[in-house]
Amino acid sequence: MHSGTSDTIKNELLDSKAELGLFYTNIKNHEIELQKIRDVEFIAVCSPENDLLKDRKTALSKLVDAYYIGSRPEEYSAPSPALKLLASVGVRPRQFFEVNNHETQKKMAMQKWGYTVVPRHMALAELRTKQLIEITLPKKLFWPVYLAKRKGRTLSRTAEAFERFLTRQIVL
Image (cartoon, rainbow, N blue to C red; front, side, top):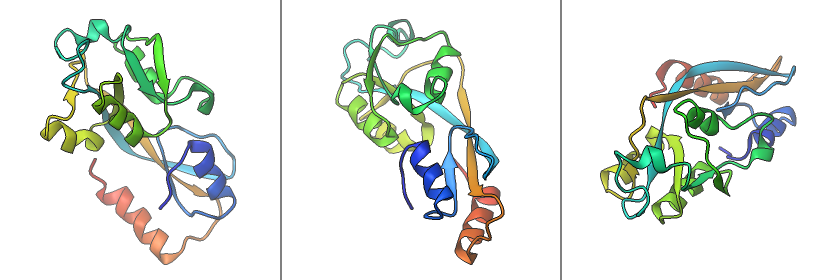
């Protein structure tokens, strides 16, 4: 199991260093086959001690002025999924901390550095323990997750079993 940018994972698939990849972006490569697994709910979160955003009801109007912790724009040919989701509720951040790892984005938000948008399942423990609070948005945000594999490649039995599990059993 590896993690990395979309380009890193795509290159591992093309170089046969990985058999399967998961993406939140619809990568375009004629050698890679994508299958949408499902839509994943994303939420905006911040520290409960973030003075600008701690009032979850008024935080939406303040998101433009707060630091957004998110992926580096150069990693995407278009705005990142999280920025597209924020734009769908009228938020276009002006100040950024650029970090291309959801776990690091979440940890920076926990330290009062700003807010981030992550898949809900990634923040459940921190929401339960009140290390993060969810910022109230006008609608629920969803984005697809894709399973990728190299076209024409025969998967190992382990990869085949994992693919079956992901496409039939995934619960996020």
